[in-house]
Length: 130
Image (cartoon, rainbow, N blue to C red; front, side):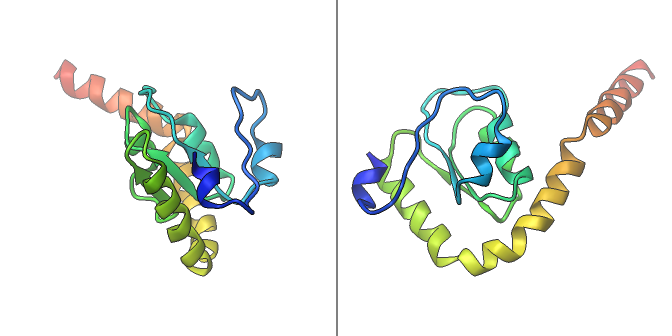
């Protein structure tokens, strides 16, 4: 239980949320500790877009979703000690993270924009069709 490492901290565990932005606005860090592999890390990307650091399990599509963002930390699934260490890393790097969140959000918006995916698929299809 990560909260055991930070008894004074305020943790909120949630399930699916139809609107993530109000929740992100009320939190400093998003932690995705789940052991289950998701095909893509929409929640992680939403956190980056929302200007929040992300601590995520290194499973499924999550590493791809947050790869290259300086505000993201990866941990082994089911490892509360690694989560606690990652939270402390974020705390100790807070000034650097605060300077990076806007650039990371802009990068995420460009990298994950629908037009970017359309162009990528179009290029792949064109290269196969040759």
